[in-house]
Amino acid sequence: MTTWLGLAADDLFGIDHLPYGSAEHAGGRRLAVVRIGASALDLTAATADLAVEHASLFAGGTLDAFLAAGRPAWQQVRALLTQWLTDEAYRPALEPLLTPVDELTLRLPFCVADYVDFYASEAHATNVGRMLRPDAEPLTPNWKHLPIGYHGRAGTVVVSGTEVRRPTGQRRAADGSITFGPTQRLDIESEVAFVVGAGSELGSRVAVTDFAEHVFGVCLLNDWSARDIQAWEYVPLGPFLGKSFATSISPWITPLAALDGAWVQPPARDPRPMPYLDDSGQPSGLDLDLAVSLNGAVISRPPFATMYWTPAQMLAHLTVNGASLRTGDLFASGTVSGPDRMQRGSLLELSWNGTEPLTLPDGTERTFLEDGDEVVITASVPTRRGRIGLGEVRGRIGPAIG
Ligand code: CA
View (cartoon, rainbow, N blue to C red):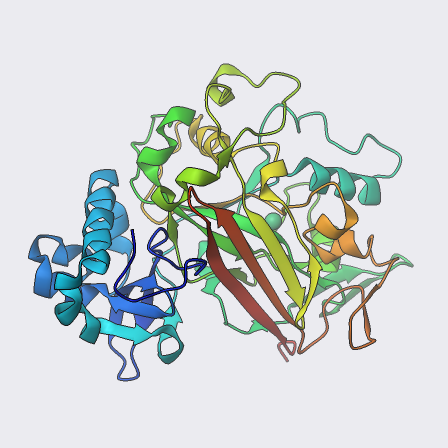
């Protein structure tokens, strides 16, 4: 299957991928887009011209209506796009609706409803436990029984490229004094996030086997974290202002349908998960290879396939108490860290709580982020025929709020 755009076989945005987004033209018009190669196809215009039965899904210029339409509509549109972009007969109508991605401003592709962040990497949870609770078991007693998570702040989820201002708040200094000021321990958390399309009824549960009926797709997420603010505030109710100032996501939402070749068996689980979390009958882990760059230098390559809890288990746990899902709900995996040092997904772990600075190629050292630093997280994924890329989530640190 090849496209008339004449892409290289190893293009990370080839015909097997087709991720969706929302963009703004120079004139200010919002349009829903699908990416092919280095171009974005204007779905708002293309459906109005060629597939009027789907036009209402994209008329708003975002993905909201499309997400809400559910899996049959997701499948129909993907089949249609595949036909359009591979059949030369559609070229004259569609070519004028293609714009180089570089010429568009990418916006948050959907309205984020609720945002939940999990803590599903055993290596990450173990590293954090060892650093912060050196005299106790690294994993808390509940960790292997349920996917731990917390509800975050949906309104401060921002699209890749948005400047992240250094947050200010209360910290406790080493001598025990309580101070107020800009965070001195600003960190990243390299994560994978899942976008809910079809909601669920209040009082019902979503089974692990119904994951693909509700989850539309996947993107990358950076859960910016102010470690000093977090450390002082988090007992007893968990993360609050140390994380709520900004959470960045990548602008392209890769549909689950593009991940057919990426499902793998997750690590062995012991103890055996409760029946509502039992996903042993299916390959429910995802083989995504992340790469984290700081000021252009790769500092880590976290492997998502090592995650202890799978996205289907996260969704089942999120709804086991009868909590409903809404279109636009976003849930993230938690920091992705592998067992090796170069696979750690946060500076907290890479610098071992600030005690082992990283040396960057320009000779400077980092424990946590400085103003002007830029972090980029990317990921690539195997397909049945090659690889696709999840794009990037990029953020530069701006000065503290005055
Ligand atoms: Ca996190």
